[in-house]
Length: 292
Image: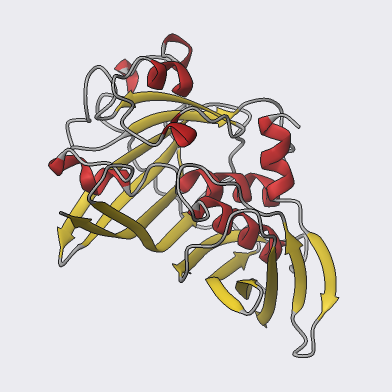
């Protein structure tokens, strides 16, 4: 199975009917060990978004998620997801998703869905240097970029993996120009091949990507990465808002930056822009950061 097919299989869940509490249940594909003995947070996010989306009417799409990473997850063991139908209104629906392995609760997510509507519109300007950013085709692939590092700044299993997304790094500690002017990581991202335009799949795939490097931003001031000895780096919670329809068959700019670090916790945020500079999504994450 190639990397893109594997990614799509992660967000393709097996329905298991309803449990004794009336919740919709699903089985989700196990994660693989990618340099740590835990599950990549994007795996949790993507599967929970897919599960929640499977229980709402076709006239509404996800507009917000809020999640808590409770345990690390065990690679190689499939996940069970239970979706509580909290509310269905005329314009909005709310779902609560609980992801478990055996008898252990690993992850929780609340998702809100809305019927598309009109109303006032406000455009958020892209970064000031947007028009002068290098085109993604002129930048090395993620694997090419990491191959040129000595030493590789992240666990090799992670740095050299293919996971279905084409990532072209503009700014990062491991990019030639270093972090952005705001001290963050910026990337061009799209699917590494054709994917369905179904909004449920698009949202799940973007949720998967949203955990890929966001927390790394808070470690930049210390020259640290999550794979280094003496560094404890754990995602705690994650929030995401989907502002407009998008299509990851095309390039999108992920503009990330650190916000605050205190009491061993750091917050980073990101905005997602189309190639035309239209803001389509925002996300933020808090992570535990301990340095010794």
